[in-house]
Image 1 (cartoon, rainbow, N blue to C red):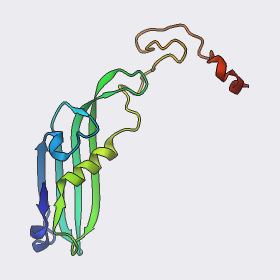
Image 2: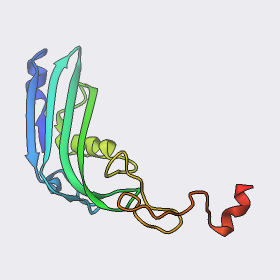
Image 3: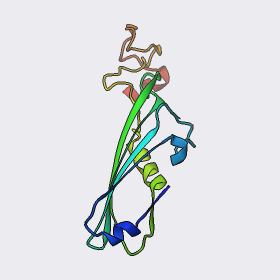
Image 4: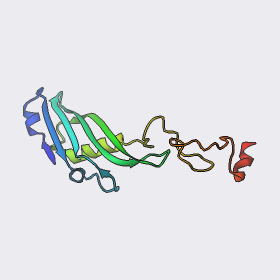
Length: 150
């Protein structure tokens, strides 16, 4: 998937809009084993001005993920954006796949959470604290680490 930049080059100052709705495999986003539950939507705006291509893009999709606190599966809704000025004289086409991948990977959270208020797992007994209160002492630690507490 590429956008020819010749049209932009020949129409300086005019903004062009592009929209792509494809399965994640079309954007080469499935190599890490992610399971997408809806197509990936990529929107781009591009204009040639001042000898550069100004490109703004957005990505929207959702995939199945695992909460980093409670380890429960949940649907992660992703929205990413990208904006840059690219040199007009050096480029002939713009890779939509490359832009989609960049927006996707920058939108992925480092620690996905099912909810901001997720209480996670008890560090003592392992129970999911979102569903039950285990009554464990929060200050209780593994005996091997008790030296560090001092």
